[in-house]
Image (cartoon, rainbow over the protein chains, first blue to last red):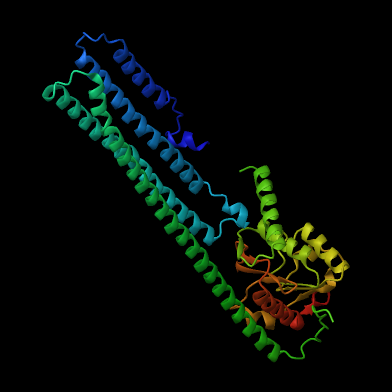
Length: 237
Length: 174
């Protein structure tokens, strides 16, 4: 199953790309501004379109960050749940591999938790900055009575870069969180491998030692029981 | 799971075991069934250049199957020194699957020897004092394996040699 289908809860989602929606709204706002005659007092109408364009820009930024991030995390979750190491290692259900699986499953869960909080995190940012934008527009319209839509657009344009910067820092935060999880689990898996390998070594060694002692005792007890056959040396002379 | 699926998995397992030999891997691998055990032992024999030593209960035919027997015969033919030790019965001899050329290399432990080691019996095999397989659960045939672990493998070889020396030739033991 492709990672995207997994992410969407086993159903593939189709939607119009965000940039097309945003571009449509920008063109609409620009067209209204362009056809306005100098005498018309269409400030309020233009402000509404400008806010609309601003909102579309925020949605565009939100989705352009959220979607690739989710896709990236989906890919990781898919890899963690379907690791290719059993094939490389050449073993099947050894204790070490079961422990590895467990560790990978925990890794997938932790990544899923991050993935689930992404929409809430960025959507709340989007809501916050849309509110800032609406308040800025209202202030511009009511208190300052700015006649030109261009000024409103200018005012509205201020929250967008601020929002973009905020989103970028949030994105960096998410990515460093993912990196921390990756490092933590890479270390965990390494520890699991090392410790289990050591446990297996210890167990086999102790069994062999016991057997060796018993065999040595037997040899002493039955020294001439049977003639010892000549053993060919494995070393080349 | 169909027989076809199992066969595919076994082929995959064999490929991986071969890769461990080619890479001279010291990693501990495992086998959890008679079929896996059979593949491991066959590959150990195929990769042996000088010696192959094994201590097995009765040489379970699921593990010591015809392919393994053929590999053993080929190994002996190319000069590999083989030592096989069984506790009681040797199933491949009883069921006639063991080639005549392999039979002289099988020894059976006397009852006194079995009594002496029965608390610590661990079936094991070694190839060239490098590869080794140690059975952790004889009922399940689960074992640990390493393609290149001279320290443990040479100890296995020494233990099997010791047992072989106190054993009696199988054909004469009955």
